[in-house]
Length: 209
Length: 284
Image 1 (tube, rainbow over the protein chains, first blue to last red):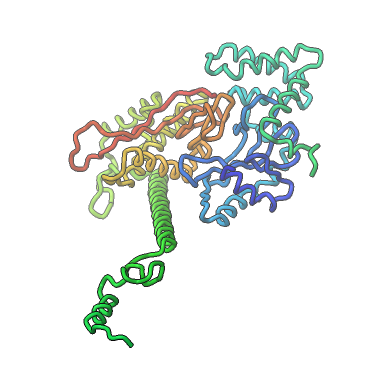
Image 2 (cartoon, helix red, strand yellow):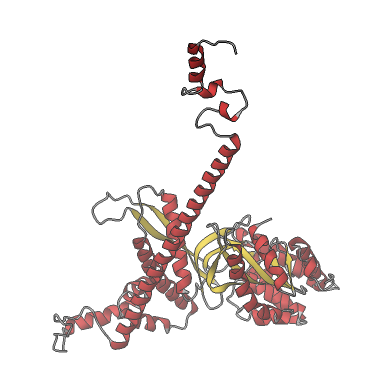
């Protein structure tokens, strides 16, 4: 068991509504977004970063992405030591308690648009992809589809290294747009795969409390 | 009672008073153990105690080192804050450290100054507004801020980003110089350990400074093809400093390089060189 998981496991009982999924404390219920807290190790043993995680699940990912997440607290780092478990746990728990409410308020795709309202025309292409998919999911199909097609044209012009991930994703999305069912089944499929890959089943609404 | 020769009695008595008397005791009895003999269980306990003592000492040393590093970072931060406050004060009151002053700090010029010199200063300020590298130079002086303000008024995004990169480069360079100057490298420290130490203290200082466009998140950030990732993930890369614009696009990635200096060691010369390797970037 990793040290992150060990420390978070001790904190979990004190925080109702949060469930430990692998090494991430997840705010229930997980639907289209995963919200939670995780510890990121660093090159120095004992020094970790605590992240307040918000990530959309409706695009393929091998591990949770941190594009929309923040390091907490403000100073950025936390020290954990096996020899001082109680102090380490307190240092992790305090910023978590301060940020739970924020995460509870970011539940639906429309909340995500509010959370990531900094995404504009000049933002990274992955962020614009997430925005386009979210717009489609909240019901703005016309705008979402238009943005996705524009992104595909942009991705076709990227160099192979940068297009390696995004080009196939956009290819599938644009193909799905042309089908009778639209993009929704594909987004649901990606979401299910991500839930399984990240071990988030326990945090789903359907999971027993 | 049978007669025993007194010499035999004396001999037997001496057997139990001589220095190696333990050899004559019945085997297995406590008396049969040689002086200084320790039961194997006692040996194990002593070994364990020694190991625990060693571990305690190592932990204490580590805590001491961390505290020292923390104090060092705080001192550096205090110096930087002082420097920034001083610059702000200079800007506010138009103080120019290059102006001629007497021994109590009063301005000795009559106020007219050298017109030719003043003109050339103005011209140089106009010139620097077209070159970000020149802005870097001017930003190091109190007057440079005015040049920077002129530069920032340009509406073009690229110019804005270039200006942010130039300004950040100056700040990072200044911070790095202070950090590396505060960390002494002892002969028993390997280059790798020294490099790690400089990286660590530098990152700590930057997080504390919370610079615009970098914050705490732009320090030691990992990326992979899917976006921002966790440290150590397969296929991910770890950056030292990432600078973003208002749209969160990455406009510069800084990598701290620490290595031995090629110049011959002379008095007052640093034994190591620190440099920035900056990569142009337009998002990820």
